[in-house]
Image 1 (cartoon, rainbow, N blue to C red):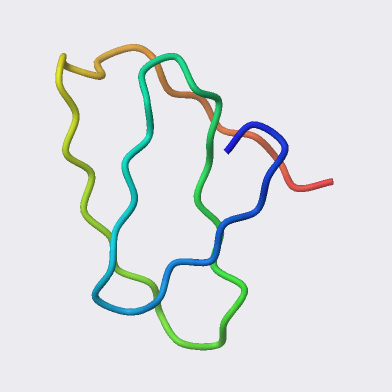
Image 2: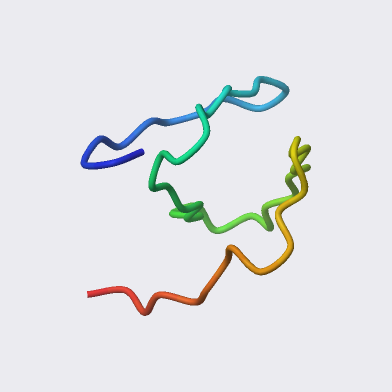
Length: 52
């Protein structure tokens, strides 16, 4: 989030405050599954960013 890397262990989650820049990345060899729950709606607020 913002300029910080947060590692989330299996079965855990994080709360991201509104208007906080963030992205998800999988650095492991296993597939990643995640759930996004957003309030208010997130329609139109996402875009793809290529890794550097």
